Length: 72
Image (cartoon, rainbow, N blue to C red; front, side, top):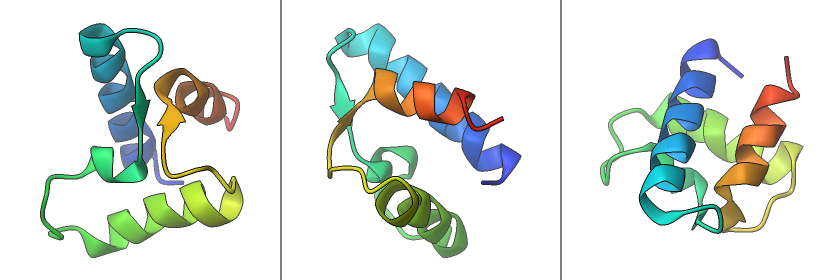
C-alpha cells in the first residue's frame, strides 16, 4: 500500500472516530469523494480491503487503523 493511501485511510478513520465514536463503521469508499477521480487509488484500496484482508463491506474504524498500523 502506498504511503499516501495509508495516510488518507488513517486520517479518515480518526476523523470518523472523533465524530461518531468507537463503534463507527465504514467501507473503503469512505476514503474517496463521491466521484471516481482517482481510479488507481480506489482500486488499490479495494484490493487491500477485499482481496488482501477479505473484509466485510462495513468494518469498524478501529479495526482498519489496527490493520494499517501493523502493516509497517
